[in-house]
Amino acid sequence: MYKNKDSKTLWVYSIILFACAAIVLLWTGYSQIKINNDLEEFQNRLTDKENENNIFQYNLSSALAQNEKLKEEINQLKDKVEEVLNENESLKKEVSDLEDKRESEKNLYEEIIKADLEYSEGNIKECAIILHKIDSKSITSGNLQIKYEDLVNKTYKKASELFYLEGYNNYRNKKYDEAINSLNLALKFNDNEYYTDDCYYFIAYSEYYIGNYDKAKEALNTIISNYPGSSYYKDAKDLLRIIENK
Image (cartoon, rainbow, N blue to C red; front, side, top):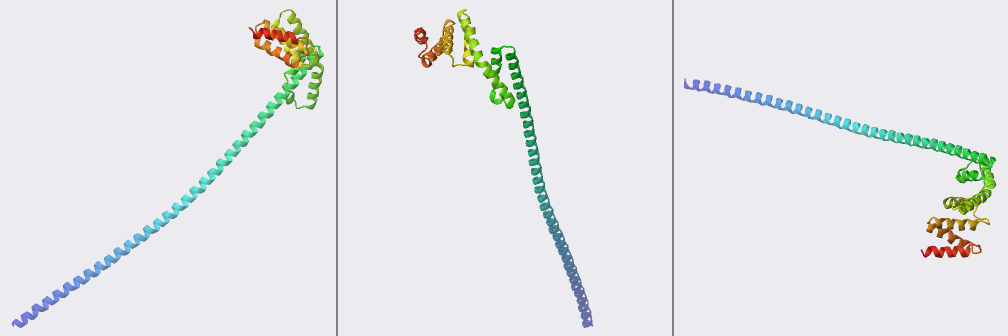
């Protein structure tokens, strides 16, 4: 009787143990499957992340390359704009230079015509003064240059003589400032005439009389240095000595 009871108990324990073992195996299998699934899901996520990162890197590289291309295009456009601006400034300068040249030629033409009118009316001195203010190097017209030189040849020598006579008369009348101005104009238009030393002599005395001793000495030294045969040579040295002793 006891043996049957023990057998039944053992059988129950065996069934329970088997059931527990089965449960453990099922739970282990389930856990393994879940772990595998989680691992696969993680690997998939990791792969997705790597793909996303690769795509991001590709997009970033593309964006950087596009950005560099755009920067290069912008720099090229800037260079073109700068080139156009420089060309525009160059053209503006050319136009300005042409306008200045045209205005200068117009003024030269008007001045020479004015000088010609003065000459035709017998105003030799006025004609010479107008001509002397003209920069002959700026005359580009051949015909205008010929007209200018013709008037110079006709007037300068005569104007010099007229200014000398005017200056001498002013000196005699004690109009020393006017004498200095006229005599200097005489020298300006022709400084190689029989009366050239006269001009320096009367300039020296005119400057001396109005108290401009330095300018008087300058004129006297010109006589002493350049005209040793002048009739004014001794008088010039005497006046120079008087000025230096003042």
